[in-house]
Length: 107
Image 1 (cartoon, helix red, strand yellow):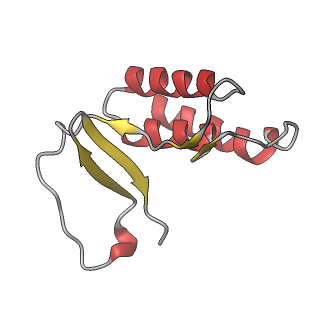
Image 2 (cartoon, one colour):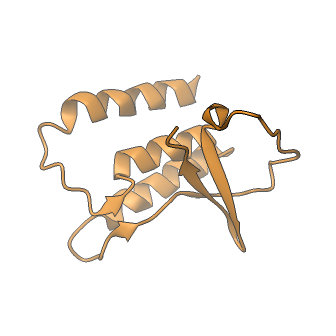
């Protein structure tokens, strides 16, 4: 329920309120997209919100910016279901030493 409310709030922000701002996020994916991916994929909603807040605080002239994919804990994956169609896959999880990076599928 809380995830749906947060996702809908971010969708509203992306559609209507970013037009009022400068539209110049220093990162890819944008801070709002990063927050949306965190909320959708992170099993702990508090960690998702905290990571999103840290990302927003880093989005300023004192940081270089660049590509910064969300990281989540990979421990909650017990099995991977393989589909014949790549279009059914919403996110790719790339394992790293301290978790997984979340990359959205473009198909």
